[in-house]
Image (tube, rainbow, N blue to C red; front, top):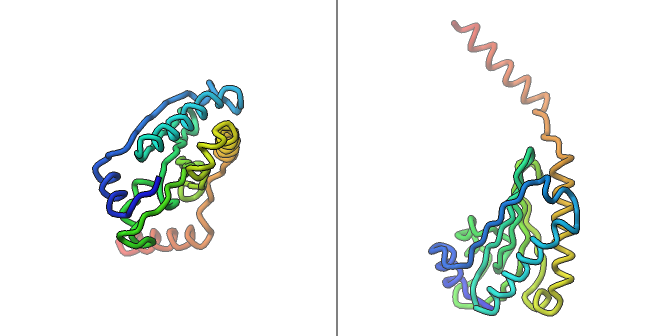
Length: 176
């Protein structure tokens, strides 16, 4: 499926795309390929169905628990989430048709400093030709991100930032 910039922006702005959200407890999937696979299969099937119906899609798996995360598959012409759709125009020309790809997104304050990661998972042809392979890739990606999230340590404030904050606090109290 190909889409032009105008149609892409209109569909995203009007939320004219397939949306699905599944919620699961971390304890119910806990790093188990076997337990994650049914969710990955469902997400991939939904993407394939969206392509067949010439529709965009955003399918999400929200993992709840001590370190929550949301994993999503979105079809787009660039590796930007739908929430940043207005920025797509900075990279593409009006009037041209562009192929859609499938992007894998991770949202979690424990994923990295920005709390967000997006990677291309597959092209339309790849996901339609070998969905089982894409499911396996998605399972591996989810396990990898869950490991990152579980092991993530938030960066401490740099010494310089701490000293500056201390100096400012000291100035405020001495002025009184």
